[in-house]
Image 1 (cartoon, rainbow, N blue to C red):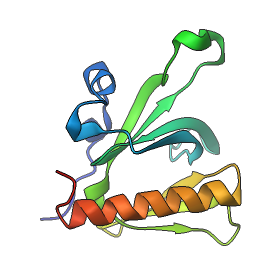
Image 2 (image 1 turned 180 degrees about the vertical axis):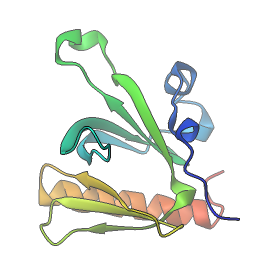
Image 3 (image 1 turned 90 degrees about the vertical axis):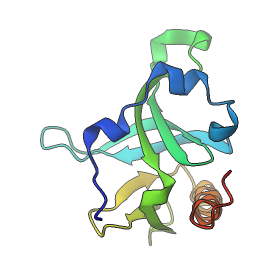
Image 4 (image 1 turned 120 degrees about the vertical axis):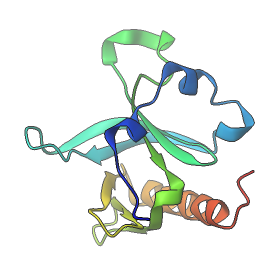
Length: 137
């Protein structure tokens, strides 16, 4: 059956955020990346805080005026790793393309440095392989 990218799949509840330490959601990596906006109204790149879990890549919107009490920020979405076929660094060295299994439009991210882009590709690719091989339990 074809994959469905329904908006409700990307809803992250506060419960998911507060339970990132649950074994199903161990944090494997975290950091800031740009995420290409794909809306008809807003374009460009939005800064987001990403958290790689065992089965999902979560992203959050951080607020500058919230201070240190803000851990991740406002939950904005979740990308199931099982839906990603490959992760590649773009020719510019900063862009990261998450290619989808269904062949639809790739998810575009932007790192702050070439080293950061390569680190994200390495950890994402390894965890996607783990999910695919059933080693994410």
